Amino acid sequence: MLIAEFTIDHPILLTALREIPDIEVEWEETYQGPDDRTQMLFSVRSDDFAAVGRALADDRSVTNPTVLDDTGDRRFYRVDFTPVGDETNLMPEFISVGGVLQRAVGTNSGWRCHAQFPSRDAFRHIMQFCRDHEIDISVKRLYEETYQDGPSVSLTDAQREMLVVASECGYLEIPRTCSLADLGEQLDISDSSASERFRRGVKQLVQQTVVNESASAHG
Image 1 (tube, helix red, strand yellow):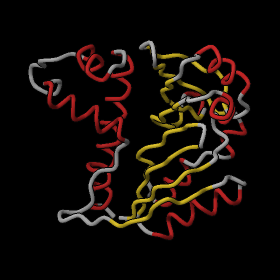
Image 2 (tube, rainbow, N blue to C red; image 1 turned 60 degrees about the horizontal axis):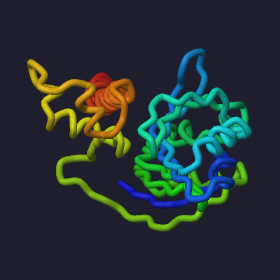
Image 3 (tube, one colour; image 1 turned 180 degrees about the horizontal axis):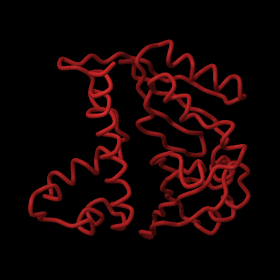
Image 4 (cartoon, rainbow, N blue to C red; image 1 turned 60 degrees about the vertical axis):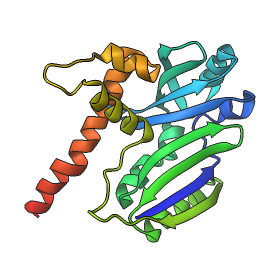
């Protein structure tokens, strides 16, 4: 498994990343929402959320920004992609080559990404997509990881953290010894955000294990 660490100057949320000093945006997930709209979940740390709101309204790549959670110094958002966002959406490219974006953090310097790929050719596909769409990409580090008992399940850092906390606090026990509100409190997010993150983490886990194993058995 190839691990890639790289920075891209991606157009998604570019207005906020360029205009707001010391902003930090942490990507959570990109997925197909209602009516096949591409939606993205992300959290923002900033000293000026009024400026964040203005930047999101002016951003050509996204629309319909919705605040899902507010913890004071951090807000959790959902946005829809515009045609500009869809045209440069990297998620279908990752899926097509079997890659997984595990972490992406946006700052004034661009998006710092950590991802895994099944091969160097798979990563080259992402690089070529960026070049074709005039997205600057700077590779910081490439290295290979091997697994004694097969590859690990690929989850985002946020999803992995959620499932670990859910297991440790007793959310998966029968009967449960903690609630979604308890999970949210430990992760500094609302119970609705905790529910959505848990659900998507479980879905990813099932798809990469049970579903994939079933497909292989019948292939």
